[in-house]
Image (cartoon, rainbow, N blue to C red; front, side, top):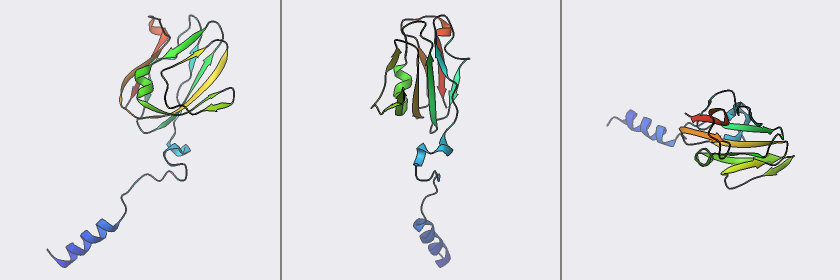
Length: 142
């Protein structure tokens, strides 16, 4: 091997691997977040305006708004296992759970779930016990 090739190989091994520069907050930084359509819980109304597509490795904030027209919840264990939940905010209280399987509203209110999309695939969130297409939202993580 030529001395210049050996020197180039040694320099290449000494350089740090290229990575995203998100800053102090790391992967949870604002530069790594995207908007997500909100979900509305209301008796007889669709959950969302069609399917939702997310990107793996991006941070999202899911805003869920319940109008109080009924005791409604959302379930989606497959979806909740494909994301990492950073925090759930209810009435200004921040909750940092290990994981979620479902959420429920007994009255009108808002909830925000900040999460990191991880596992690519096809998932859904739906109102428990419902069978109507409008009571379900399909989510794709690419």
